[in-house]
Length: 550
Image (tube, rainbow, N blue to C red; front, side, top):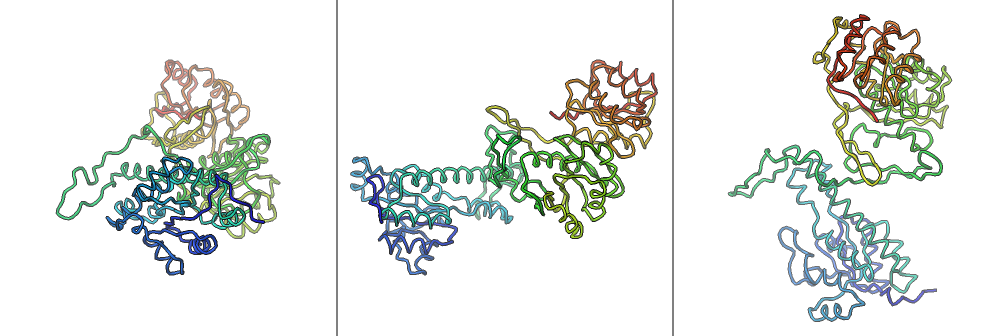
């Protein structure tokens, strides 16, 4: 049974179609025309495509009285278009003014936008990208969406079928609730579209490439590679997010959650957001957090490395001659915590690693690595619930802006990517570290970056033998690290993510047998701590920068 149209749901009699993505548009337009008697107005390439499929079309210039001009930049920006979209049907004055000006009302707009992001992703030059910024499309979408009371606005080809079914069920009309939902989608779409343009132009300005070649015989002031770069943190940030998947829940089952990919990371190589899941259950909220912590940590090391993370805290970090050896030693750092953890490798994972995991009877939530051999994947198929993620490569650490939410706001900062140049470090103690100690100190210092403050790391042989962090004071962190290290602290080195405000935490490390310590320096009591080191024959290195991780 066909329902009668509501007074607020007028039948669709006039439709404007102008699309970049022509998927299914001819079939949609044909149904609107033949089933519902709608007049189809169209532009340029869309009109030609519809005509080729036998759809009767009124060209846009027949409506506006103007030809398309300026290489297609101007074709729909006209009162006979926007007046037909914006006139309120319930307002007698609007309807009368439209009639006086010869403006026919438009009941539906079918528009999708120039493929700006695809143009940028294809590596097009600056001028080509500029030409692929759609102006008329967003204007029509916004006009129609603003007047959703009377106008249906469609941008996604996937919705054509549902709209036709609704019209068939409602006497050729769309429902008000549907038009409201479509309007919301439009404003989300145009917001994301403008955001992608803003992010691209900001990047072009930062790179000094935002220049358009001037027309022949003319000069353009200020053009060229000397463009003024935008501020690192502008007054407004267009942060686009695209939903990748819903998650079963957040940190706890009573919390809802989802994962979104940043639009500026849609093509980013080797990122967690674009990693390919090779097997296993869907990733959880906590999996993503732990994987990020592990992947960020393992990228710090040039030698083959393994990082095991549990609840956002590294419980084992090792560099070795190969990743299988690195895994075995990282696991031995804290096998209790490693159970149910997340692992990251900075080299391809082979059968030897998987066999080692199986020998340890270790339950693993997830593993992330640049790659996995087919044999390793085949063997891990015995554990089908384990999540295996392949990134395809590994990025150098840093070069990122980090966002963190607080109630009612977002904090932004550059990623912690300080150059760890041991040649620039200061040694204020009488005893200088040996070359072997310095290498171990740099390793421990890099591990510190991934441990929650106050962080203390004890290392020996490219291995984190003791980790203490997340404590409200540095003494407690030192106690935890020393207790975990046990006898392995003797002859080891230690790192502190920030300076020692007193000598107490340092004395605990020295008493445990640590022979060298690395820290930022800069405390009012540096002299006291240096004197303590000299008393006990411990070498101390100042880096000049800290690695707080809150």
